[in-house]
Length: 106
Length: 157
Image (cartoon, rainbow over all chains, first blue to last red; front, top):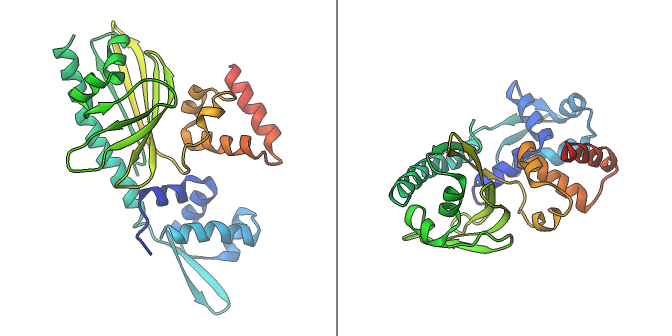
């Protein structure tokens, strides 16, 4: 599977529910049941969010007995931050170029 | 973590002059990239880059000398983001705000949704929330009544 790009990662973190799930996982690994209870969501609803987060590479899962334990992987968030940083540099240069253009063509 | 670009610049020229520089192909070609651009909603523009596929996009909001928004499709990346320019007069010049955001879903419905929603309201809300409202408008969920009322109230305000 291709590495998720900034768009995939952003789509995964755009939903508030999934941000909250990531926030909770940031404080420690959690079994899926516990996540469902924390958010008062049904198990299928939480599982669906977790599947999207997994596809984006933002969470990983391991089995411990009968439980499925989820943990956060923040690495893909870098792709979003890098996207924003690279366009911020690009547009900062372009805004300066726009200023020069306006000065030269009043 | 930074997820969006949000920059401001002040230029000692009136908004009409800055607007011209943002929307005229010849002007864009000088400070941005060689451009085929028109400030018309729905217009598909292109910006040529050396050694890379051109940037393509669609104009989704035009309010002369005030707001310009378009999708930004980088073929090398395969999906679209959204660029929004906001111009405000300031001390005889122009305060220009640029927002460039990733979106969680392609911006396909904005044109028709303009009939129902005020784009400036969307800017205040932030685009992700706005797009969720679009989804509701296309396929109303059960909670739609509450959502739409809060939207209408804000639009009126």
